Amino acid sequence: MARLTVVAEERDGAGGGEANLRADGVTHVFETAGGPLMAVTDVSFTVEEGTFVGLVGPSGCGKSSLLQMMAGLLNPTEGRIVMGEEEIREPRPAEIGVVFQESSLLPWKSARENVEFPLYLRGVERSVREKKALEMLDLVGLGEFAERRPHELSGGMKQRVAIARGFCQDPSVLLMDEPFAALDEQTRMTLGDELLQIWERHKKTVVFVTHSLTEAVYLCDKVLVMSARPGRILKEIDIALPRPRTYDLMATETFGRLRAEIWELIRGGDRP
Amino acid sequence: MSGAGRLSAQIGIVVGIFLAWEAAVQTGVANPRIVPPPSQVLPMALAMLGDPEVLHHLWITSAQVMLAFVLVAPLGVAIGLLLGESDYFGRAFKPFFYFVASVPKSVFLPVFILAFGIGFTQKVAFGMFQAIFVLVISAIAAADSVSADYLKMARAYGASRRQIYQDIYLPAMLPVIVEGLRLGMIFNITGVLFAEMYVSRAGLGHLVANWGMSFEMVKLFAGILLAAVLSIAVNESLRWYEKRIGAWRG
Image 1: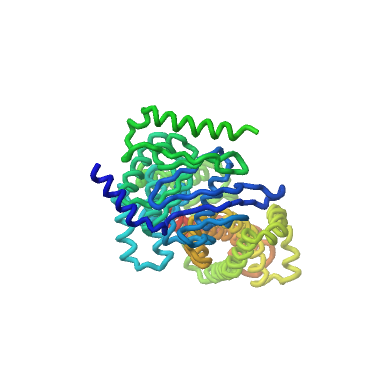
Image 2: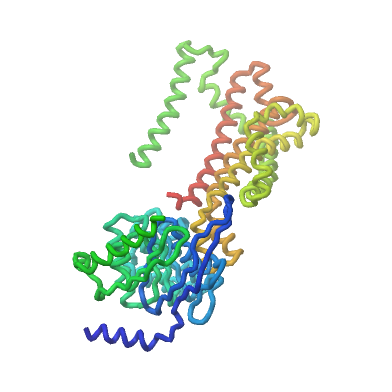
């Protein structure tokens, strides 16, 4: 337990709050052909620096819109997203990394070139970004597949490349938009575990959008449960499970209770 | 089947066709006055490649095809990308291209003769006309093929407008555009040869049409063979390039 204490102290020491991510009364309205569509309404929450926070809710509840607003890809119609002291109105690749689904890999680039793409965009020197990309691929266990193109990799491997790309710039915040949604259950569990191992070492602030409740409870420190459209935060649930997380936790009563609680909220929120 | 095994099987098929053709003529199944045997056609085709007069006509056809292609390729691709990327132009003009693309272009040939005469310019113009529709349509498809996921990812990582064009749009579209160029080339060759056969004073199409009318069957078949081999060579080299730059398509 000594190790955990050290980690906690480090977190306190570094916890100047520069990587706190906050939503203040965020509302987003899409203009569609059928008229305005309210995706999320009056959403407020805080993601503490160094924590792993999940965002769950029924399909179309606006959780992806919310994530895109945190990434600066979309601006709130009302309210604001704040990181530290600054409002986020546009992408900030150096501080906020985004992990998309595997379909976001560029198929004409090798795994390594995909991972170093964010560095390439910033004009980082070739040798530096190559070294960094290989380091990141090693981190996700794909060192020997660096020169393969996405079509030569399995779904799980592609998603690992997308994760490595998210980590490549060493951002303080990592936003993950249903990263494992396209994967089968077994691959998804393995990748979740690997992600946690990496996270334990790097302690980034993570916001993880998912529609898998098991995944949310297993990975997160806190889960934000959203209602059906227009999305609101129904409840913030603290996941009081010890870390590092292991599979046998899934069999515990606490795990089952937390999962059931989230499910009840989502189901209830669906009803008019 | 291994690559080498497949290649030898394919060569075998071609040789087999020529042998069957020869046998059909020799046994009297085919009338040699209408279908001359390959034993006469192949030497004639080879002799033509050393005949300055035939080479002159071949050169004229090639020049027309190349000029038409050099002019129409950037034009067609530019129009296609404009229609594919601009909502306004796309909605206004896309239907026009789809409709006219289905009309056989050959019915317009008399118009081209009246407008451009029967010389070099008219062949180039008609080749361009034949090719432009497939170029435009495939460039529209190329623009549509750029996944929104790539664009969202690039923007999240801070790509500038120029970087999005250079590092996302261009590589994503290139294989589809080259495929369109290859199809455009086929249509272009068809247009030029057809125009030459209809009315002209020079070119491979002109020779083939004349040999047919004067019943010079060995020369006619040799001419057809040359046109076929040259077209296949052009098509295959573009396809090789297309495969090379599109290897990532899996």
